Every structure is written in C-alpha cells, then in structure tokens.
Length: 175
Image 1: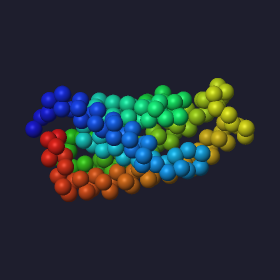
Image 2: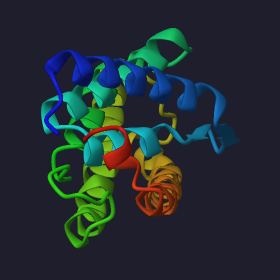
Image 3: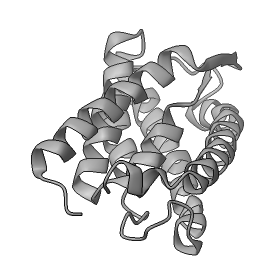
C-alpha cells in the first residue's frame, strides 16, 4: 500500500523526535564526549522511509540534539553528516535487513568518521575549538570514539532491524 505524504511527514517527525531523545537519553559518557544510540533511529529511518524523508530525520533529529544540548557548535556538521548517512541505504525492499543495507554500513561509517574528523579539524584551524597538541592530534584522539560510536550503532541497528523484520514491522505500519 502506498502511503500519502501526510503519513510520511508524520512518521518523519516522530522518527526525528525519537532520534533527539535517543541522543539525549540513550547515551554513556566516553572519552571527551558521549556514545549515543541516535544513529540507530536514523538508520532505521533510512531503511523504512524514502530517502528525502530519511535525510530529514537525520538532519533534524541529530542537529536538534546538538542545539538543545551543549554541543550547538556541532549542529551544522551533524545536520549534513546525519542526512548523508541515510543516502546509501534502501527502503525499497520488504525487509529492513538486506544484503545491500548490510553492505551500506561501511559508507555510513566512512561518512560519519571522516565528516566529523574534517569538521573538528576545521573548527580547530579556525580557532573555534582548543587543541593544545595540534589539530591532527585532537582529531586522532576523537577517531577512536567515532569508531566505537559507529560500531555500536551499527550493531544495535542490525539487531533491532532483524527483530523488526521477524515481526513484519514494515508491513504492519504500511510501508
């Protein structure tokens, strides 16, 4: 059944809100930041919704968490990066977990790690962030946290999507 745009817009808003909540409340302190489960919701949106809607979930949900929290300087990068991580995935299949979507975890990881690394380097180079040991040292230090973040979210996404596939979630919500 093909859903009307109003349904897709409403589902997009709900998933964007869930992304913000997952970033705020499903997180643990790590190194000099947080590990959060927000990307799990964004990746689910990427395999549930048409790409433009999924991009809005990522951009809006992720950047709102930055704006509402204490990390507003990261909001521009988050909006772009979280929108881009949805692009490689496909919602055109009946199942959430497909060979294609499993393979697309690699581009998700690359976009996230490279995107935040470049943005951090740019902020340090412009003097917006301190880096006593230099920009590349700071970026390298955060690289480990970014890798853990991506691996954790990818693992949770695959586990949750597999459970949702068993319950035929996508068909139950009419997508």
